[in-house]
Length: 426
Image 1 (cartoon, rainbow, N blue to C red):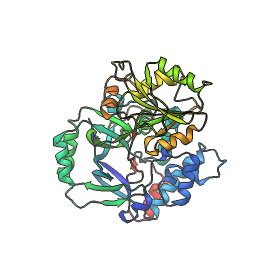
Image 2 (image 1 turned 135 degrees about the vertical axis):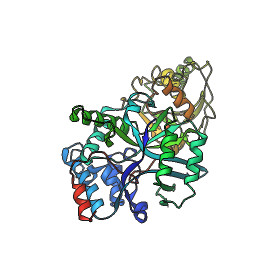
Image 3 (image 1 turned 180 degrees about the horizontal axis):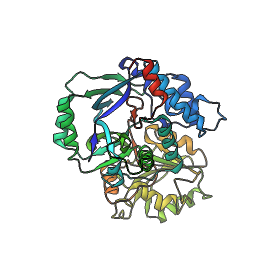
Image 4 (image 1 turned 45 degrees about the vertical axis):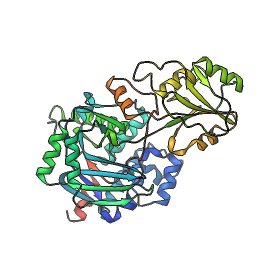
């Protein structure tokens, strides 16, 4: 796998706690607006530039993306963002509760994604891919890292641990209570050691950030075309910003489902239909069902929970054996009529960190909610290795990677970013 050190814009260490922000795609439009109103200096204003316009303004208008460029340049001009012009790797440790993970931030080859060395496990939506591609084009920057996983490598792990003995560049607790610690690896010998060892990683997996990577690939194709064969392959646009973590350190939470109605079925009819699909359906319960293992589900409907357990053997196939697939293929589609879960407005996907009480609230009196056991990283890898795709919203990784710590320039055409740098005397 080809991974290179990066040059980037990054916040002044003392300003990082107020500048970094949750990733752009965890907010709906109103949520993003509220967050930026409460945190006007945060990077989310750059990542979601429509928040600078009235609610009725088209979020996909050209001036929205131009605003992202303008805001990014203003953060460079006022000294919030520093330009780190030395090619570096960064080590990024996150600590939360009893959890901890450390990843390597660098530039990952787009061709490795295209050729399947860096593998995906879900489809991207055209509108979301287009949004990120236009954001990259307008700012000439990649503004958020993809979360990547690799099978643990003890030698690479030892290099990472040795580099963490130095003084960190950043060390703060973010608004979600996650401690964010970053080390800068700039010494040429250390950079080369990491680069060489990363070359021995034969495969990586996109855990989170599929749309960022797909947008980077699109921009890369467009820029290669505009170069008319003059691209050397070393240009910055041939790489995307990512953070690579050992698979054993990743934490996956359940991704639950809520359907707005029971498809016209009475309670006894719903139970009978689920039983006919190969499930053992338990009695009504007042307490939520949180599945203790694969093949077990909780179902909330008509004011009560029931425990569902798959009585038949799960299919011997990486994708079909996923609990998200089992639920989709045996209940959501045949019983509740959800044929296209990625498009059907009757279904919601609820991250497990919101809890089962949130499922009850969203289901209300008429809906049906399902709690699932979380997909494992090993299952994700098996599906990707088989060249298959998971059902929509099969994984929820926590904590998310906040944005704003690393902003990577990919196109060195003249922009107002350059004017901001000159104003600072760089």
